[in-house]
Image 1 (cartoon, helix red, strand yellow):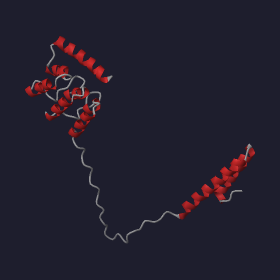
Image 2 (cartoon, one colour):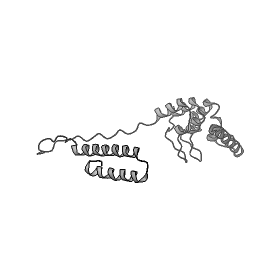
Image 3 (tube, rainbow, N blue to C red):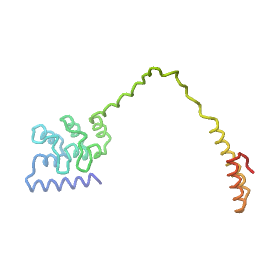
Image 4 (cartoon, rainbow, N blue to C red):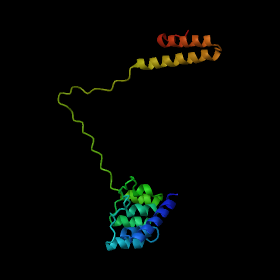
Length: 185
């Protein structure tokens, strides 16, 4: 669908450019889908720069990626096209292509992310005292959790044999008391 809309846009652009005389950039846009060699010849002759962009901010690399023209993408990158160039709508050549091969080429051409800062080196303080050992978690937390689990299981068992609202209310009260005392009555 996107390529169909792009094709219609390219045809409309070509007709407008032909009516207005058009420049070398518009000429390059018109022939991107067909002949990569002609586009690269325009770039090599200096008539078109790889940095030139349309009024919406699309570069030749955007159009080549959108048309899935791998040969042209490689050629434009070799001539200095910016793989991270953003159009006015925020799209990049990488976001415009669907072909995996072109994605790989564009990802390889993207500048490497800056290296993460090195972790600070821990230096011993003067007069730091003896090294401290990790303290195990208090046992009371595990006892409280096991009490909670035990009370909940007793509560669920009581609900299984209770069929009326008063029995359910009594089971709920017993569960609440169990959480405090540890005894389910």
